[in-house]
Length: 158
Picture 1 (tube, rainbow, N blue to C red):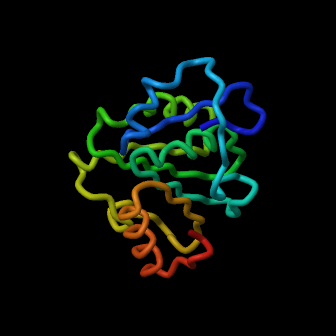
Picture 2: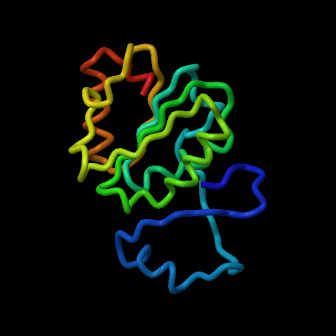
Picture 3: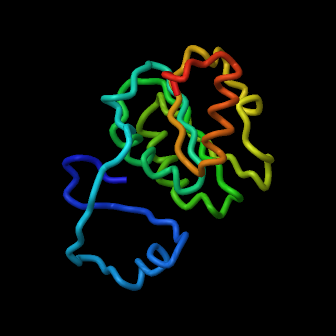
């Protein structure tokens, strides 16, 4: 969630196992830690396309938090899929980012209220004219990628 040059490291961890569940008890603000990374290609420098769709599931929102703070003049639609509205713990921060960047359209997709997310339900006009960044659980990423490919989106645009 931090960007290069930030004075502080900001992270979000979803407790999925013993190690991640224990982080809040074993690490405190100001502790020295060893950090590896970043991994992946979620940077504005490596992501072409004037029109982008950012699709996040759960904790997969974290790279988009950093990107939303560095956003340039691209037209971006960010959709964050969560199980229910209370799970959208970064919603206010992202709404503030959308206020600062007029080209950022942000929405929370609550599966409890709207059902499982799909490319059809997103009603993307001209889906082959967009670049897609997808981050979240493997099943969500695979399903959305397959749906995009079925609509003629090039794999290189995902």
